[in-house]
Length: 493
Image (tube, rainbow, N blue to C red; front, top):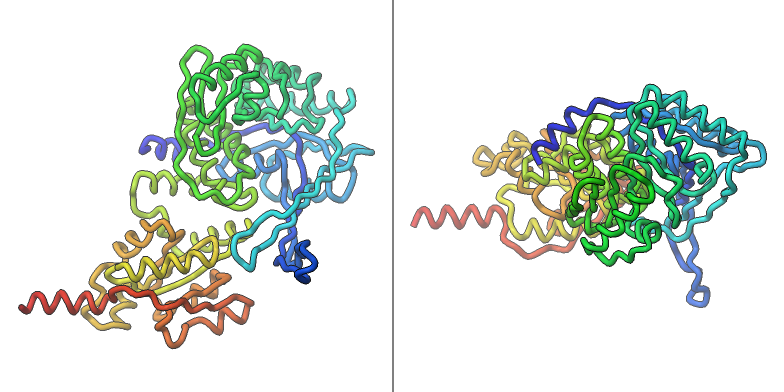
């Protein structure tokens, strides 16, 4: 694991040329309610809506989040959605956006209607697709191919994200791959859900999921059956003459097979899955950046496994950053700091998670001598939303509140212990007497406090921007003061 941390720290910000079906995603969020018992159809009361880049654009955003540079090549319509998509790709940091704007071809738009389930976890209710899937004209294919040739001379990696929407087809993909390989470019393909992979002949690496690999190879793959995966992988390598195939297996990890080697399954760490959307995009982007930085396939795959796992814990497609992968690797090593963040870094994380429709819960306290009562209370708080932040008083702050003999445990150790709890997402330390400056910065959706607290500090501030203040029931369990008194009494006897 340590060597993977060193690899990520050495990423060289490679240039990646990306070809595929770029789309515009619209998210419409709202609370769900029913008009009456006689009307079972749920009603979405819209709270907000937003647009995001979608399709191959998700891969572009993920490459940029990992520190790579990306050139986007594809098509869009001559419409407002196409203009918006181009502007968003450029604003995200794409080095070059070569979207061919075509008459009579609408930009692909996917609209997702999201129920917030009374401000808890977001759930997609329905998706409406507006798209054209016909193959490009011969002239348009030539234009796309020329754009790829102009970019691959300076890019170590070409990534093809094929949704089978017409941009990539049996007639132009072999030519694109041949041009890139001639220029010394490695070609990584996230294939479409098709049965014939001959269009990808000559690719360096293919990354189908389990179902796609089964369809393309004709081999039924049940679970992580190594024998079936080996047969499917060999068939795909024979069809495509590729160097390597890696088959993503959801919770079972990733299976890697190189042409001259034996297959190996890299298991995935168990995750709390919020949404499987975007995991394949994260894998493709991570492989492209890692291989472009000189990684071998096994190390690149191990990092892609981490990125894909982090992605499924988010709702919607949220680019996974290089810093997040490093944090997760540290966490997997058991090192301190994976969840303990300074407030500026925490603020950026909360913006990212809120953009994915997550509900942010905040609580605070000294948490000196962590005990069962604390743990039960924090589990209750986490159930109120999808992300729990704990703000703990610094040592100086505790002394001002509780006297010179406290805290018993230093702030760094308290933060480390809290961060080790599964129900806790982030921990931060504040030196002020109250958490109000943090509340002003983070603006959590819910401020939660224990049931014995007569006044919830910061409640008025949270309510001014529309947040909720919730007082949890008292959870039975020893208090810190009681524990200290018992220790003192025992020592005196």
